Amino acid sequence: MDRNKPSPTQHSVQTTSGRISYTEQGTGPVALFVHGVLLNGHLWRHQLAGLSDIRRCIAVDLLAHGDTEIASDQDVSVTANAKMLKEFLDGLNIEQVDLVGNDSGGGIAQIFAALHPERVRSLTLTDCDTHDNWPPEAFKPFLAMAATGGLRGTLDAMLSDKSVYRSPQALGPAYEHPEQLSDNSIEKYLRPLVKTEQRTRDLQRFLAAFDNKHTLAIEAQLKTLKTPTLIVWGTDDVYFDVKWSRWLADTIPGTLRCVELKGARIFFPEERWEEFNKELRAHWQAAQQKKAS
Image (spheres, rainbow, N blue to C red):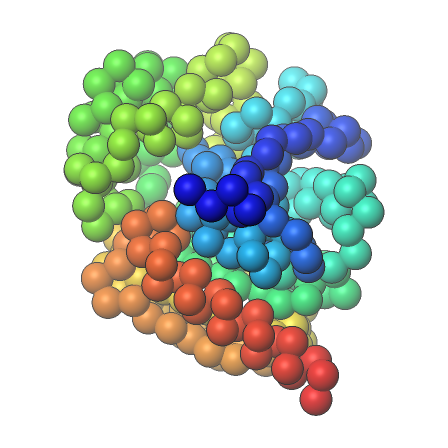
């Protein structure tokens, strides 16, 4: 064990949108990691541990996720989450970040970068909601289930029998090797969502707010976004076809690299973390050199 290596610590900060929970590790320029639906900052544990030597890595819990606490009438749409990120950074007196997003968190990252480009030192997008592919077709049955009142029962079933979470009918398709995901990680992701009835209702509202109008609204801004951008995409993603990585690369003029990970699926940041961390290190260095030139 490296006693000199900083350990992850959990904190929260009060914002207009709610008390936002986050985990941080390391020192230096800030890297902000944004997870997607059903997950929380735990998704980025390998990035926090592996990159804390060069960044103050912060993994935020979105509205209606993790340990973040919100009012029952708080807007939880993706645009509201992008607004929350600005409040969050303001609350921590952070001017600029290396922004990294996955899944719906990648959509939120796009919105934030489009609306506040001056706050983003570099941008990294992984398999995520893009343009009019929101929600993706493969996720619509889950949304329909939630809309008809089945969310709490489904969450309880996945918690009581973790194999349900890993099954092809649930989150199994999001992983290359769902059998390798620990019970502990499933607990960390789902347990906060059933902590109270309001927590489950908040998630249901988050799901009900899925609408591509949020990403369509920022297309013009993305076309002028010169922020140094890295796009890393799994080629075996049932939710987000690799064509969307190419759409982003063609749309965002600041794109420096577009990397395709053969056989990877949406949650590769925790399955292929060593490969992904290597890409992040190289991208942050390239962005810094670009700024200096």
